[in-house]
Image 1 (cartoon, rainbow, N blue to C red):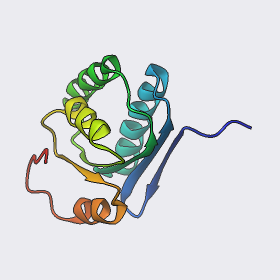
Image 2 (tube, rainbow, N blue to C red):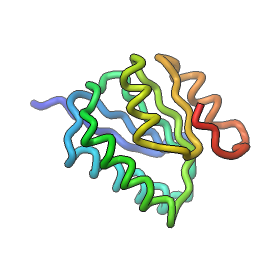
Image 3 (cartoon, rainbow, N blue to C red):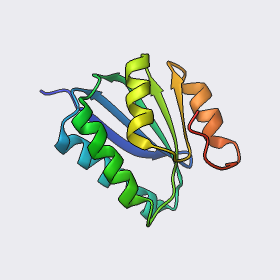
Image 4 (tube, rainbow, N blue to C red):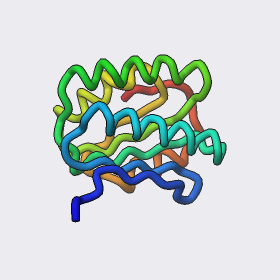
Length: 126
């Protein structure tokens, strides 16, 4: 049985997306589509990306993510927290998600959840 690479579910008012292993274009598109669809269906605007088990993607996937976020911003506004295991994945997440309302956390799911539950004060990108 193959290990599931993508798990997305609403949990306590937040959309949780767990991604593990090697990121492919198909997996990236599926993740984006499912998060946006779930956000529209539930009216949730906060997303936690747990990428602790994700291998760092190539720059081509980062550029694809930028394009998807740009097109998404016309229809939906999400606050995102990324939990990463290292500086490389953190840097790529920042590049991929641009200037939106997001923040990167190193190995700290609790801090990411706490930040997501705070009132939004605008774009942070920290």
